[in-house]
Image 1 (cartoon, rainbow, N blue to C red):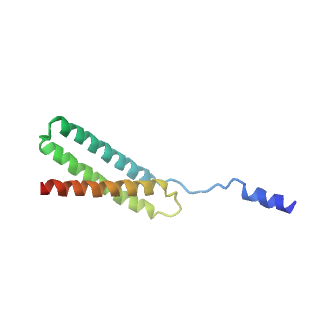
Image 2: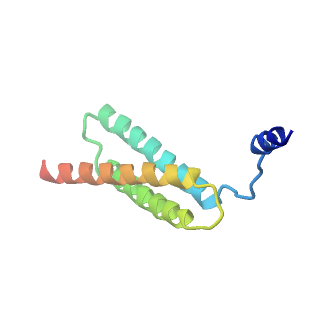
Image 3: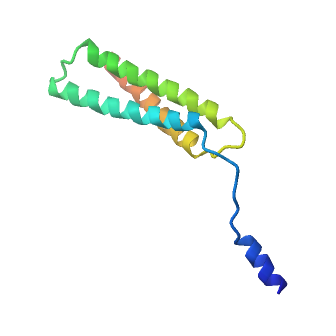
Amino acid sequence: MFKKMKKKEKSALHLSDKKHPVSGIVATGIGVVSLFLFLVICFISSESNGNGGILIGAGGMLCFALSVAGFILSWLSLHIENIRPHFPTVAAILNGLLMVFYFLLYMWGMLT
């Protein structure tokens, strides 16, 4: 009888008061928007055969700035106590990779 009670306690539902931070969700959204804008800019640039002009370049810099802002926001939301870290972690990884990618793309454009 004692074993059955122990087993029942382990499989019981455990509720938590942890919540998803709004800043982490916003940072994830910023990362997705930055990636989507980059894909749109790439499509527009390919349609104009690489002669998109200054607006395409400014759009790329805007994507980089969005990525930096999303990374900072996700980093700040990771340091909040008593949260679920799923969205801030996804946002930090997504925005961090996008920042590195945009920076490398910018450097490659400077060298060519």
